[in-house]
Amino acid sequence: MQYDVTMKQISSHSNLSLIIQTNSYNGFTRPVNHDKLSRYIYMGFIPANLANSNTIQGYNVNNNDYKFLNCDKNPNSYLVFYYNDFHRYPAGYYKNCCYSELIGQWINQSKPTKSYLPQDYFFQTEMHMGGCGGYAVSGYKNQANIVGAALGFPFGKSA
Image 1 (cartoon, helix red, strand yellow):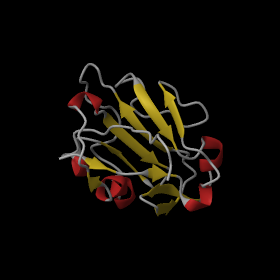
Image 2 (image 1 turned 90 degrees about the horizontal axis):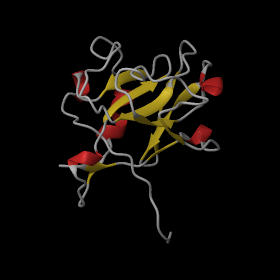
Image 3 (image 1 turned 120 degrees about the vertical axis):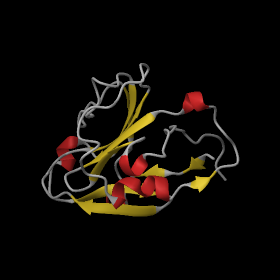
Image 4 (image 1 turned 60 degrees about the vertical axis):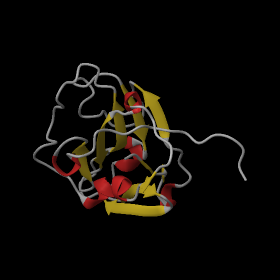
């Protein structure tokens, strides 16, 4: 079964656009698996220069804000989609640390979809939110059953 979710900035940061970059993270924090899992699509929420403070941060899923207080000024605010061409295991502390309810909300709030994408469209993910927001890599621990995710963009005429 495949699921669909819409993610955007939390209400208090609605003036900031989500940033999509390929193989770069300009203005944001370097993903933990930047070197290990190679090519990636980077979705940045709050730029590092704004996320490096003890403020309320997070993301919005299906028009609901999921927030946390950045407790240590750690400026991570991203979701990365790795191609992982060589099927490597991730690096870092994904097995020992930091899964939180916040990190799983984009998955928990998803809805089953009626249209399906081929498996080639799915990528291993790494989500990192602040200090005290959480960290997770798909396929491990609380996301062990998550094979991957695909990034999509809405287009067409609006109603």
